[in-house]
Image (cartoon, rainbow, N blue to C red; front, side, top):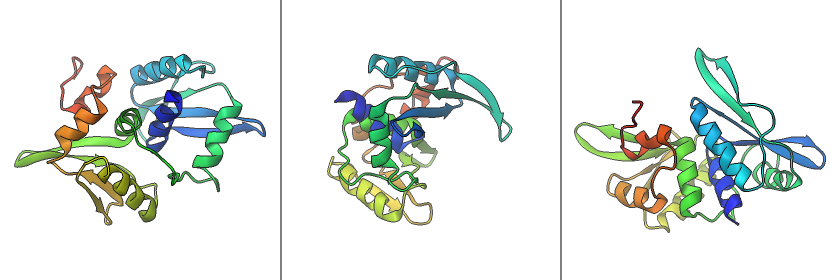
Length: 190
């Protein structure tokens, strides 16, 4: 099911799921890009997950951001129980990675770190996950053929400069203009 792989990738990043009743839950997502939330809403609607209300702008930590929430669905409660078994987000140990899953994860919590003296590498911000969960993510990314390192000091993962091209080829083109910079492509707006 493509929609589950998409949501799993988003959950590895910044997406959240909150319980709305004993029978259902909804997706919540905040972003600095309204364009992304409009695209996300359209994509989720194509999967049958409709937006609730309007995308709202708010001010937090001296930055403007936008907030999306979906309508509530029983299927999302099932996903919530898998990803938040004790109220804290975890990486399910039966997680399978696909290009869509990894792309959405990268969009949500990845960055292309450029250093003028060396090739760029990719950082996957996985600080909210335990070291054990990071080791599992490292293992399943390595099984896809990528050179991955874990930084205990940062509690995050890095894609080696020698795997960046293969990683970006695996996940495919960026689907939304506002995040093309993560592929090393300057957007029309920046």
